[in-house]
Length: 482
Image (cartoon, rainbow, N blue to C red):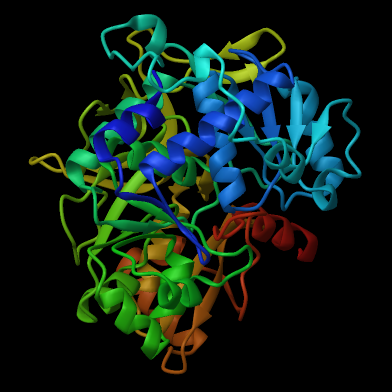
């Protein structure tokens, strides 16, 4: 199941890893990660061991993750942007055999077995013969007919969380393998292509690109830590890019960056709701935007448009996934990409219904031809005067108005109705005034759904380590102000 060795055999001298300093071919990648895997084994890392990594996106992290793939250890990349106490709280549940990270990030963490990336790389000696299990000529190749290979635990990726500890999702080799196969069938990523690793490797969208590269033969570009995406677009010859809506919005208003985006094969846009005005602007600018809907639990993408789109849709369900719409329009899914469960004291726990469907808490509708539209979250809904209020419906209505760029709607306490919607909006200069917004929404979606208060803001509070707006923050802000 050594995908790195298989990629080296298939793609050989094609670029695999592109940095500001060098280009590694798949053959180079195989040689380097084999040495790192041997070094890790010398430190006692064996199949099934959990190794936590606390690092920003850089070539060293990518090489370490691929080396761990060779050892069949379980990679657990952490959100290095978390404060030390929060990172410390994650370690007992992971129970790792080793913690890898620079001293600046791990120095204050209490853990008995720690190494820095520099210490590991310094031990690599290309003159020392490798033991048999790390000799590429004898490495067992992956056979997708072997169930034990498919079920081998491969990674622990934490979900986004605004409060408390994020959930630790365990994925198998098969989960990542079939996720990558289906994604590559829809949006090919092959030799000659180059995808900027713009999403953090501690998120499922970032980690999934490693497997897509090994199966498809495309190269990953890794910029220096802290490099803005707009600068990376100028530094690398890219063909593909993954973005969340907040990032794309910023880039559309930079003429030089926009020219670079127009030359790409694909801009994969997901991670949160996409405002119609943003997609309209991107489409008018000639950007090849593919919309996608995915989740950590389903090993990244679930549905993606088959080509660039100017219409708000999540596209069609990708191969190796099954999706259904359940009670309350809840989105359900299952299939070989479905994760193994959340870590708990008793091992991974996977909560599915009697038919094996995983209940997402997201809501959506399927068109007659199988197009998915995600409409919101069940846990965002609140009741106002006896009526169910879905904030996302109000947000879409707000963003359909000229000059309103983004919106978040939260419940505000009300003595008569129990709860009423309150809106936070980001606007351009041509946005209507508050009274005009209220009058328009009252006509279009009804008075009960029209926000009782509107607050204009210049900068959003985001979830740590993401570009997602922190909805819980605005709920709490409202509670503190009422």
